[in-house]
Length: 130
Image (cartoon, rainbow, N blue to C red; front, top):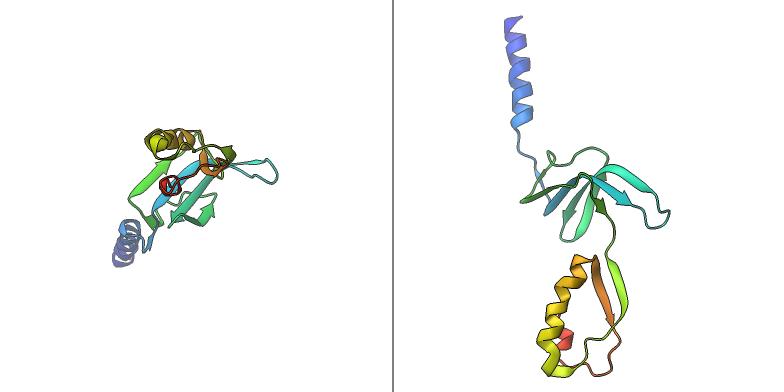
C-alpha cells in the first residue's frame, strides 16, 4: 500500500515538473478576444503564436503547454486583428524618409499593422520602410 501511494505521488510530481515539448514564440493567457465577424467578445482566452501564426486557441491557460520566451498575462486586455490604414502618404522622397520612419511606431501603438500608401512620389527608400 505504501509503495502504491509513493509511486502515485512520484508520478504526480513528475507530471507537474515535466517541460512541455511544444514551442511557441508568444503565449497569451486570460485575453478577451474580439470576433471581427460577430462583434462578440470571448473572455479568458489563451493563444499560442509561432512564426506570426496562431497555432492554438483555448479557454484554458496555455502557458503550461508550451515552451516560450514570452508569456503575457492579458487579464483585462483585448486581442484583435491588426488594423489597416488604407490611405496614408509616405511621400516626399529621400528628404522625408527619416520623418516617415519615425511615424511607424505611432501606427503600431494604435493597432495599425498595415498601411496602403497613396502617395504618388514614392522612392526606393519608401518601399523599404517595413
